[in-house]
Image (cartoon, rainbow, N blue to C red; front, side, top):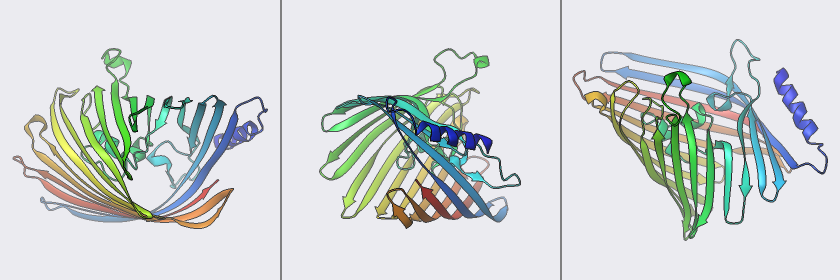
Length: 354
């Protein structure tokens, strides 16, 4: 709590900076969330378990943006927790959260190009390519935003190419410890390439995420490649989103296992005013070390944002949300093990933005 107050005081002092200093703008939001969760699990060995729980969480985010002139800029995001998407769940210790730096990046915006570097935001909630690449067996329910805080350390360069814009980002997924002695360039590096263009009123975003060296995930030190596209179609006051991505990996991991898997993720998304919903379907097949295991994930997200109050100074809103996840795990080898589970989350989020 003392750290949070100190950072808030620092922001207040910076807001009175001299006219010769950079123009700095501050904002943020604070949210309270009530979540009901209902889990069900069963397998062909006779297990049959159900559970339910009610939790209370909060999240505080402070944002700073500095215009340094001539296109140069700096941005930062501070959060009340650096795990679980920034949400702190209340438990026996109600005062266990401090503000931490979540994002920080700087760069320059020019007429036909830009560059930036630092801890970059990913916008993975609306672009699931990182979800499939990093979580090929469970790429639904926004895992990149929840586990990795929707960010990555990297360097980005973008430029206008033809009628659209090409962005290339070199990202660091993980760093091996010096004790591993894997060499200077054997940490987890990846290249993210995305081209965004309009065909009439339709926006298309073909992209690729290529892990170049020793990426870590379900298996360590592997190099999966992921390809796909987002398409956005306006329909009057609403818009429809279509996404399709495919990932494949055939490599030896850190333990010498013969990693061999492939999978795809399909998304249908709709947004109309305050209502947003999408459906994800994923299928991944894993034949590592001669096994033959199938993973199926069906996920539905639906939310409605109610503006209780809104002005030029800020807003107060309520967002009821439903998240449903059905999971299938099927082994087509000698064991013949099969399991099915589901998770239903109902949430009400109250948010003040300023």
